[in-house]
Figure 1 (cartoon, rainbow, N blue to C red):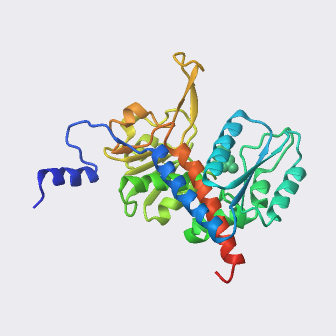
Figure 2: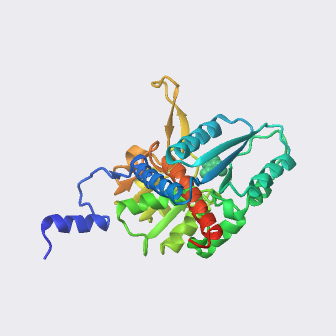
Figure 3: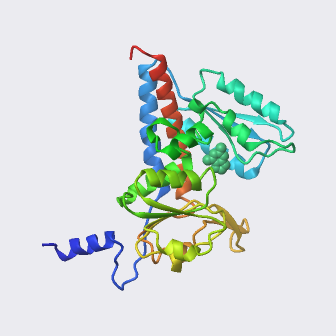
Length: 322
Ligand code: GUN
């Protein structure tokens, strides 16, 4: 026998909410990322005590001077400093050649005191630089962005314990976990197939046993696909493209978008919105991430997590007596 309250909770977990429109539960990336950062701070403190001042170390390599990259990098450096990770920002001018960028990467690859290396994307160079060549030049064991074909290949085969998982999809999974909704057996829909968000998100959901549909710019029936999603992850890079009416009642909606739209009521004349139309989706979803304060902070937290993990792997390899 179920009580009325427990019956209603069970029905809600299956997406049923009667004819009463309630707002979705907001999944806070700010809160979740803080918990992750607090846990990592303790782990780094323990490493320092156990291994005589040892600290995980991260290099962020930037080519050029894009405003958005400067902002993202400042968040990464701040989080690293708070956790106790030794993070270094290496800047190359926008006149740097592909060879110069490669030489910088190789010098970090060869430096045993660095455990993580990311090349901030997009590259801002006046010269032609092959992105693929650059991301694959990062040593796989230091590739804490998980973007090299070695790490991406392992993820696509389901070797989740033996690779670095790209930070944004990893953060999305953590936010989905927070809802308590199990991924196994659910229908997940991913919008976008980028190497940094959509493609690895597809793999992660698949290997967590969801049935996954990945949609992209050539998908003809996007609203229909979205309406089938128990779990919807959107990384399309288009402001408010997913409308609330498309969303299945009770779905988990994870919005990876960061878009600036004009807003005359703001002193800056603009505001940040996601790829999902939040106000309308909030009326149908069971759970939803806000923008800002959803996926963004999780991306930073997961980069820190990967860096600490890389340092732990380094210690395991180099401290055989442990
Ligand atoms: N640019 C925007 N997001 C990211 C990220 O997660 N990693 C890198 N390297 N560049 C980015």
